[in-house]
Amino acid sequence: MKDYFKYTVEKTMQLLAIDSVQSTPCPSSPFGEGVAKCLDLVCDIAKELGMSARNEGGYYCTCDVGEGETFGILGHVDVVPYDDDWSANPLGEIKDGVIFGRGVLDDKGPMLCCLCAVGQLLDEGYKPNCKIRFIFGGNEESGWKCIDRYNELEKMPDRGFSPDGDFPVINCEKGLVGYEIFVDAPQDLISMNGGSRVNIVMAKCECVLNGELDCDSCDDNLKVRVKDGKTYITAIGKPAHASTPSEGDNALWKALKFLSEKKGGQYTFLYDTLCHNDGSGADVKLCDEKSGKLTFNVGVVDTDTKEGKIRLLIDIRHPVTYTKEEILERLKKALKTDDAKVRNFHDPLYLEKDNPLVQNLLSAYNEVTGENLSPITIGGGTYARALKCGVAFGPIFPNSESTIHQKDERVSIDEFKKTYDIYYHAIKKLLFT
Image (cartoon, rainbow, N blue to C red; front, top):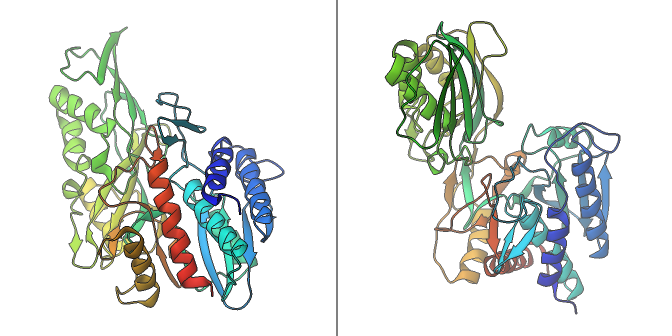
């Protein structure tokens, strides 16, 4: 029998080598050529492993084996953008026992671990006790249009998991909302632009003002230049996933702090209101016993949409006992604007800790690791929300550094092997006889 973990690493490297950041639609996929190539490769791998597979027009692909009630394993092949400032190749490189690559954790690597674990179980002679369906989406990072398409054409499995979160098992995902809000721009502001995605902590922010400001700055990541009666400001931060904004360093905060100190007025108001990861400045510092604290991230800012206005795209992960509408009203009042709306959202997910799916996955994790952990809550949004009874299950281990959505996304080969073993054990326990 072949070494299935070695095979998983090999196929993961092939999948990482395809740049699948959403791009210009093409005949093979509405999400770009890279997504199409990834879905085709996944289908080829599944067929090698003894499953049936099909690519649904570049929106998603399905990989099936077994008969009966369908159990879903949901993940995605699209990835968030990356830059050139990596320690290794963002399109896949093994260096000093570590696999680098955009998507190795989110979510190409974990999904291939699950897919190949099923292949190994089939090769070992085990029989599925239900129909196992993998759904690989192509648009998780920027809209979930792949899931919308799936729901238009097919019935979503009632039960399943998504290997796109944290271990040991996630029984609660906070509400996930993207808000678009317009606020008055200061009169001297010519432009303010920053951020690439609402669900990423802003890594760069650039401002241009009429008038000359002092160039002194004690922050190496804030550059100020004066030319022809204008002031140019470039602030550099550190990206992170919007569900954990405290792990990043928001460039907008640096720019607004500088402008608040130099100019005061509306800049101070914006700094005081926007620059808090817990939303306290915008009167949305909320918490509940089931799911914990709200998180707040201004992911995108620009002045190109409406004259005299600053557009803010704000990512909020809210406790399950609050609503997106209630939070919107609080934001409008705090930011002194009525020009605000919900741009996108995913309602909260919550399963009781004693739910059989939660308990089976939890016991599989604890049995492999020798730990005795309990289910957890996250602010991330996973495809588990698409299921009536679903949870997120791995791949980030407790107390491990998460590099999802960050520079140098990576996992050690040892940890990747442990991930594979957990998925193998869980899938065998739940879905095979």
